[in-house]
Image: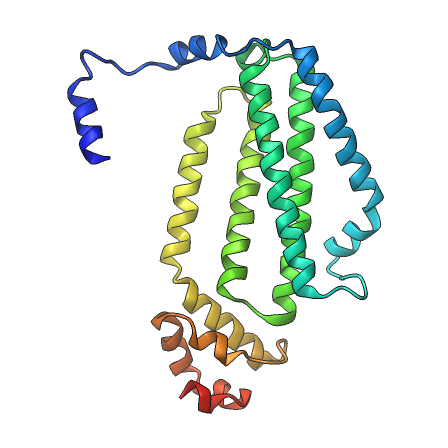
Amino acid sequence: WIFSAVFGASLRKSNPFRNDKEWEIRLDTLRTIPNLVLYSCVTPICFLYIVYVFSQAEFFISVLLGHAPSGIVYSEYARKGFFELCALAFINLAVVLALNHLAKNSGQNRTKAFTVFSSVLCSLTLFIIATAFTKMGLYINAYGLTSLRLYTSWFMIMLAVVFLVLLASQFIRSIPTASVLLSTFLVLFSVLLISRPDAVIAQYNISRFENGTLSELDVYELCGLSDDAYLVMIRNTEALKKSGNWSYAM
């Protein structure tokens, strides 16, 4: 990658970088499908989402209020919500990108109907992300934090940022969407790395166990983490002893 970047830079005079206007002209050659055709395809999708949201209104409200419906296993509850979110998010992202790159009157010449359809899809996706994130919050509140739960939550935050930027770009057309998304990903990924996730997991679970908000401290799970978690465990040996699994940690 470094070699190709340097080699490409050395040929910049013979192969100059294209500006935004040139790329917009090239994208216009891909926009061959009439807007009415795309709208006819997207309308049933939006309608199904709206019907789905209203049919599950009571369920979603209970989740957003922090109360899981009775008879639901937390792990299944959160896992099902995450996989549903992933499927719907990628479908909606593909639909929004298709609208932006295939519709004749898109880009800087987008119509009001185009903006409405794209905004509805982004808004419904954000609602589903909020619901899935709340499900994960209930799971973490009941059983504590693990690596998988932490990284899943980070991924959902990243998805939410993607659709927030796409939603904003429907109204503020000057937003450099690709640059903003790339910068946001780099910032969030850097924060994830610098924050020492395993230390955060260990400190969160131990603190909650000491405060009495977590009924059981999973020392077995903590011992499977990296050395960052061990440093936290060494500073909180009293909590580990109270958990009843001190012998395993030793």
